[in-house]
Length: 95
Length: 95
Image (cartoon, rainbow over all chains, first blue to last red; front, top):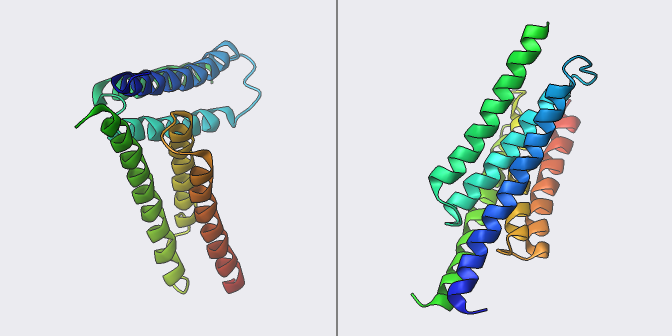
């Protein structure tokens, strides 16, 4: 692999890793949305909060390291936060 | 900057960012060690736990992205965890 390709490869890889991590959290939120009627685990929301916090630290690091641009990173976090807010709303309406 | 230099620059930058982040947490632990006698804020330990969790996510991402080697990353986290354990021990002895 030539050297410019190495840098491009690193950017691609970073974005792929972050997208995968975001998708995993997305899945967790979806599962909880589908289980609104059961809500077996009250710790689930705290787990989601923690996951999103951890993810935001990854994204922040990737931005500072110059691997992804700031807007893409912030958009990824905002999307997760919006989905989480929708979940909370649905949970509150259920109560 | 030539292309091989870009990659080296990215590795260096990633390591510098992580070292800076680790140093910030280190400082927080030190401050709390010095304030053992006052212990004004019971949330301080939770803040430290959260900080170290966030940092471990940054390091994990940097390892997966190929920016730092696994051993260096794990060593950084272990060092912080050991210092936090020392702080907890000191707090418990005080009680």
